[in-house]
Length: 207
Image 1 (cartoon, rainbow, N blue to C red):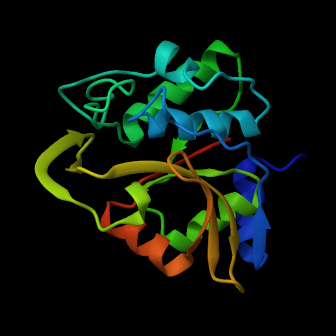
Image 2: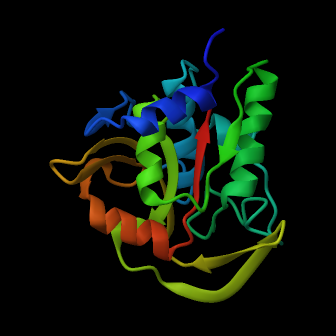
């Protein structure tokens, strides 16, 4: 009987390698999608699964919009600098809209609230992590705006940003991130973990 992805992840967690990486093609959000980091992070994740996508396909054809609730839909337009963003519930629904159209058995899954260390297990399993952080890894600029979904509260911060995590090296203390704004970067694990924690521990995987 073949192992399910969940069973495989448990086995990996029990014997986690000290380093792992997933090959991903870098996609930059600008100039077409100045506030489209979430769509672009999702695009990169889907491309690691073998899908061939143009940069704007998700934003044009699958992204869920909802200017009244940035948790469940994109507030504004990712094609404009005045656009805001979207949090895991809405991006999961967006991803699953795409996957269902492609008749895929895979699903986007909300792993928000996972410890930062738990993210390594997914990467070692071959599943890049879509993670919320801040633009240029600066301190978050929190506002008084909140959105609610399924009993969870999401706080808006002006430099909200979404990236694809595709590698880690515990000995080098680095995380490899495909950043839609900056390109491929290696960031200190403690810095990445701090930003992940303080901005709400928001993350998605697809399997």
